[in-house]
Image (cartoon, rainbow, N blue to C red; front, side, top):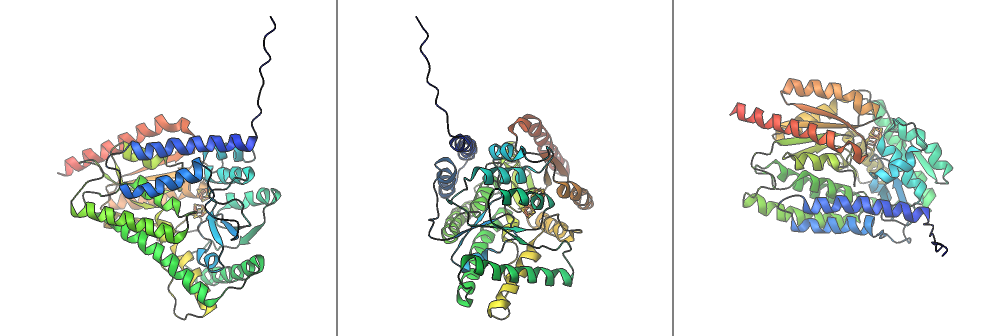
Length: 429
Ligand code: SF4
Ligand code: SF4
């Protein structure tokens, strides 16, 4: 009898890509929800949001409003909101996208940059159906070099020039000019004028989100620790694409539940969990493996310094005169002052901020991650290490990418580090 001819179905590559992403997202969400003790009820909003966006491919924003993709946190959201457009951060954390983008970049390139390129190629963006305009601040060399490829994909990209010296008056002026020019270009691109009242309102909206984050974040300074770092990373990652007022309300709800835990002295971590500060290349969903490993190994992240978390909310806009271009300048200042990315020549602000976080959150150890191939984070590791030695705070330096293959070796190092912090605490009595 002849063997029956099996019919083969050919899956559309975009559908396959989406399926792989959904599997990655699902696995991480399941672990975030189920592998840790004492879940917060109010975190359901965020778990569900990520499930809808990444597992069910739901689009949050309708195509009525234009969408602006941000390639770095230096893109001023206030100006985008003031024009009734939707900002979406395009920095990506999927291994599926990292592999796709990796085909076009040298092997030792930053995972975040490869994954962002892979996502743009797939034309499947989180939360929105399409991206109308991409804004690229010239912060990072690797991103800058991929822009040519992104433009070849047919995307319209606007370059915002960014200074490499932080502390000088010239840099401040240079960046202010860049932001003013951006404000003019975006009006031309979207075909609508920037109005004083709308910008004031947008500054207020972003300010409210910053306040909501900070008051929740401050509760992490308590002992016992009322919220785990893995939840804080999920909350801040949602800021990349969520509707801002809904996001602020959801953060307020988490705040109330966490504040109640503080009153009843409920511990979200273990009895002896060392207090960790996370710094370095940004954990971006679903690549939350390092924060999750730290907390699975009985550490607790009480503070962070990265552009997918705390750094998003640094420094409030401070306006002297509520005239349109005075407000634009004030917005520009907030973004330059708040940036502690290692792309600057010197970055004393980053060290100062780390020292302050260590003091305020009574940090016992620092975990510093650099994505393999990110030279600036790799190089800055030395100055951060020296500062930590001076303070007597142990630091673990980890070089990682998005691949799940690294898992075993990485978790062994993390477990050993957490154990050494516990021994240190016992010795100190
Ligand atoms: S690591 Fe630096 S350059 Fe990259 S997105 Fe974050 S702030 Fe921007
Ligand atoms: S981690 Fe490094 S290479 Fe990657 S985006 Fe940030 S600064 Fe650029």
